[in-house]
Amino acid sequence: MKRLFWVGVGAAAGVYVSRRIAETRQQLTPQGLGANLADGLRELGAGLGAFGAEVRAGMQDREQELTELVEKRTGGHVPTYGEAVRDDSGRAPGAGR
Image (tube, rainbow, N blue to C red; front, top):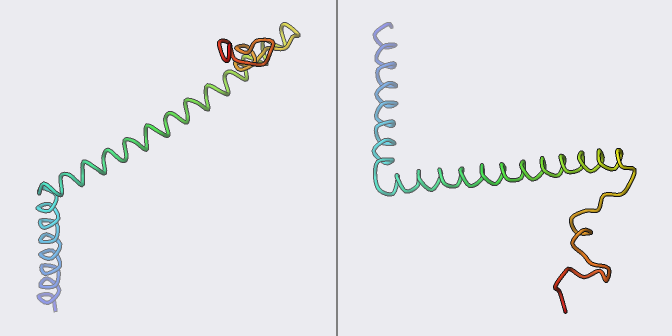
């Protein structure tokens, strides 16, 4: 019974090792390297997009905090960027002149 157990363990280990070798050989082909590179670039792009979204959200939060602080200290309204760049006619400076 012990021998049969060890034969089974050896067969399972042999199958595992042969599959790992086949996977490694596939990854070392030009197609495998290209697929790995593409996956890495895709992950990098997703990470950069998420980072940019987090930065924008943090900037908006901080801008809101600063606006509230200035309004509290001055007692006046702080215009948004869009309000600040528009002239009295409601048009952006230089538009339609």
